[in-house]
Length: 184
Ligand SMILES: Nc1nc2c(ncn2[C@@H]2O[C@H](COP(=O)(O)OP(=O)(O)OP(=O)(O)O)[C@@H](O)[C@H]2O)c(=O)[nH]1
Ligand SMILES: [Zn+2]
Image (tube, rainbow, N blue to C red):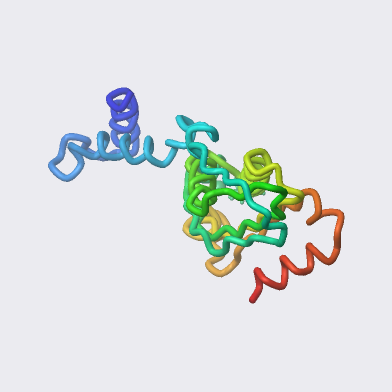
């Protein structure tokens, strides 16, 4: 697989007018192939393997918030990065999820070709699925390099997307508590 992808990169480099055999570039197709495989490794993962049983019984029934999970993804339109942070909250209902698993869930969906809105939704759906929570909220704030280093070339705009499920959607006080904690 890596060799196949490297071969395509070699063709792209040549098509761009570069000498793919010069010293600085000779190993680039292979490096780029490996990098792209890493950045899309989320396709090879499953939610079940990733959670690895780390869902624990608990009486906790107040909001749990995991803030500022850094995120690197790749926009499916230009294959350029978007970079930001993700906040995830849930209202437990008998079960809590191992803390590291929130970051692992973010990475699994971020390491694919994505748009920010779908990424936000997929993270929320996954947390709901594994926790059976009364509600899940996800907010992502990100900057898209396709808007910065090309295209409209806007350096300071960012995008915020959110998905509210269950209590976060139906109970204004829960939503408000979440938004207050996230912006603190
Ligand atoms: N909603 C959304 N749009 C995105 C995301 N990532 C990239 N885009 C946008 O996808 C659109 C693709 O538009 P096209 O007109 O097909 O492509 P383009 O000619 O390269 O567009 P420009 O970026 O405006 O130069 C652009 O408006 C991008 O800003 C994302 O995560 N969410
Ligand atoms: Zn883009």
